[in-house]
Length: 93
Ligand SMILES: [Zn+2]
Image (tube, rainbow, N blue to C red; front, top):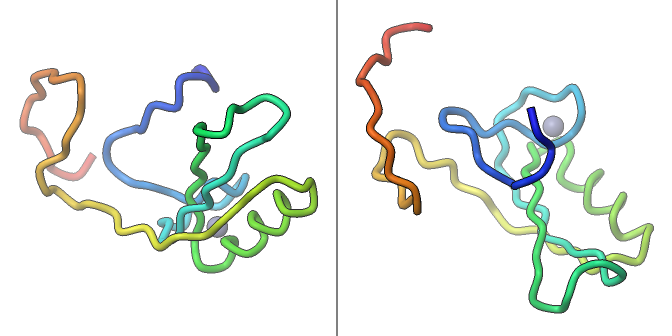
């Protein structure tokens, strides 16, 4: 798996904290001024427990960071640039 690209995996939006599998309910929006231009944004997802942890983690590095609520879209229509046909097989797993 590649760490680059920032693609979102379909189905489930877990917290970005390592080892945490809780569904995220927060977006931690940040950027690194050293490597990101002013209009770049990185977004981590966080559960209730880790939203402040991740914010503090970034704030401690003097990164601009803000929290926003995150509403996972269940099987609503997703707007995605790439349209790839998918088989409808959502029974268990
Ligand atoms: Zn978490």
